[in-house]
Image (cartoon, rainbow, N blue to C red; front, side, top):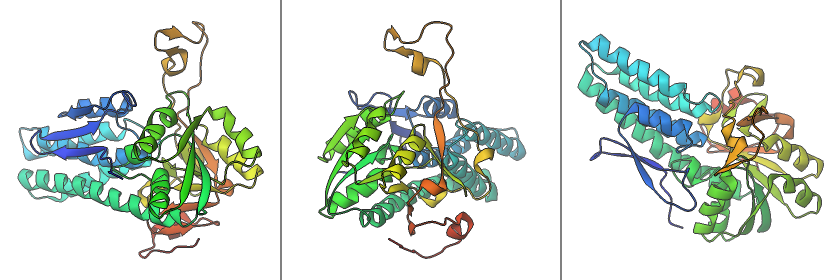
Amino acid sequence: MKEITTLWWDDTLAGIRFIDQTLLPTQYVIAECTTVDRLITAIKRLEIRGAPALGVAGGYGVALAAITCTGASSDAFVRAVRDEAGRIRESRPTAVNLSWGVDRVLARFLAATDATSAKTAALAEARAIADEDTLCCHAIGDYGAALLPDQCTVLTHCNAGALACSSWGTALGVIRSAVTAGKRVKVISCETRPLLQGARLTAWELARDGIDVTVITDSTAAHIMRTGKIDAVIVGADRITGDAVFNKIGTYMHAVCASHHDIPFYVAAPLSTFDATRSEQEVPLEERGREELAVMGNRTLIPDGVPVKNFAFDATPMELISAIITERGVVRPPFNISALLSRTAPNNEP
């Protein structure tokens, strides 16, 4: 499989290049970003999306701020970069990787002794985040592949693939690693309303790699679970607290159905997605605009004046999770987030 690179730093551009995910699957376009404003727009419009990819984007965003910001004094320069970092951090509230990437690179920036070394350090740290993410995804893939039977059908929701990371993917990384190991894996991809990340992105990725994939409507999932056609469900995550997994809206519904039908429900995510400081009730759930539900192309789908609720994420209680697949191994209940984050060595518990 030829790996997809989702976003990267281009020295010639002095900025970020990334795949514009809003145009897939019909157009493959590499976009350019040389300002923080453009990056924030890309994040809000979901040109760049997916928790690990947002962590990489957040890191590169601070590096971009360090290169583009100016100030009459050293203090003014630092304040300007801090302000830009804050704007990036707040551009999407639910996915924890974004703030994690911003804060990690900002800390390196602030530790430098002068402007030149601060810019160099910020970019080096951002690149390290991207490189580490790729290694994490491959480790997650290897650990997760061991959980799948030699022949199986896996259901997934939204897109937790290479497009949601720097490359390879988390949930789709497990599938890729299983296929690479010789396992015969078929994938059922939920379309994932309203922006169809499963239909547009997951199906595009897997078809590109020659992996057997079929798209279904979100509401079909329970039916095919009941008929015994699903062996496992694997999803990614945008934040994992001690009591819940936050992921694309609809994940909770699939977890309930999987539990009812005794189907293992796996979450694949790097440790950067874990949040030991908050509980479910303390995490804001992003709500997106009415137009995502009310309009499709040139057609209006909802009568004018009728309000909508367009949650981007939901929370799945930990009791519905069979296992969490991380770069340090597979973790099963009971889930102790603080203890997991303190581990320094792999711990595979299939």
